[in-house]
Amino acid sequence: MATTKIWAIKADLASAISYIGNPNKTEALKAVIDYAASDEKTYSLEYRSGINCDIDNALEEMQAVKRQFAKEGGILAHHAEQSFAPGEVTADKAHEIGVAFAEEMWGDRFQVIVCTHLDKAHIHNHFILNSVSFIDGKKYNGCKATYKRMRELSDERCRNEGLSVVELPKDKGISRAIWNIENEGRVSIRSLVKKDIDYAISRSKSEDSFYQSLRDMGYRLKFAKHIALLPPGKDKHIRLKSLGDEYLPEDIRKRIAENYSKNYGIIYTGKRRMANCKKPQKKLTGYKALYVRYLFALGKIPSRKRHIKPSHYTVRQVRYLDKISSQSRLIFLNDISNENDLRVFSDSLSKELVKLEAQRAEKRAALRRKQAEPDATRLKAEIAEITEQMRQTRNKIKTCEDIKSNMKEVQAVNTGYNRKTDRKEVRINEHGSRDRRDDR
Image 1: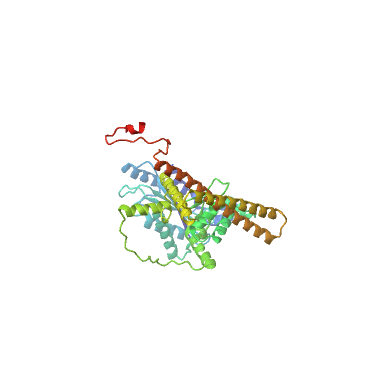
Image 2: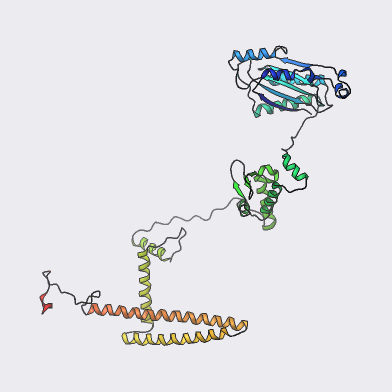
């Protein structure tokens, strides 16, 4: 089972070449057993090869390519490694696989050194790759795509030789601190966040209600490339994807749908049918439009848009119309034809109001005494009814007073007096001057 990795060298190319070519790194496998007994029993085997360069003069040849294309700065080289499982491959086979792999991966454009190290329990190959191509002078692009190709070629070589391959890489592990907390039986902040998320999912009917439940629990949400949560009292966000596959946004949506279907029924995901379309009505103009506008302002027609607050002038006019309407109803319903009828009707209302006040006082006194629950409820209802009758009676008395006041203004106009100054109006003759007959 071979694993691969690669990293860039920016400091010293010579030290990197001397490191992988050190004979002490190529000790035989037998030395792993005899090393503890005696250092004199160890022996050395070098597995070193050069691709597109001489292994003994690799440093000079690589630097010559850099000078040729004037690219001696930046990344000097790339250091790659190919490791095999302990006891799975011999040193000769490991070096053979490494050379074939390097030739196919980089041999067409770059200079490469391949060295096989035997100082560990697992045999591994080291590769030093010149960052500048000797073909066109372009630098090696060490991106994710090239590393993916490197991993695929290494796996293909291992399969051809009958070696094991890592088919499915393991998920990213947790940090050492979290591992220590969970190993000691303590509760970590991540486990608490998971429990809160599970609880929010169990009580949510949609994704919006799920996030609102987290906000109600004190979490702060950050919606960016990855959704992150800030637990209460903490200063570091936790991404949902770092909690596991079941806490990814799409999996959370799936769990919410399953929970909703289990408790409330199946969520309909089909196409929605549009309501029957109606022909657009013609726009009103003129007095019809003005009439409809008044109806909206008076609240007679409910608006489907936001509430339109009427102006102060409109409110005054509406109150004035209500006042006139109530006076008209009182006059015609009670057959009031003159001032004497109005006075008699107003006196009867005053007597009725006194009678109602006495009845309400009697009911309240009975309620203050200890009564059974049904009797108390009945008394409260009767008191509320009497109070409403008193309110209506007071309104009628107030309307009678308004009628009396309006009658005085009407009489003043009919007798020729100004209603504001209560003085006799000045007559104007046909020539626009004051008529002297008023002074006689």
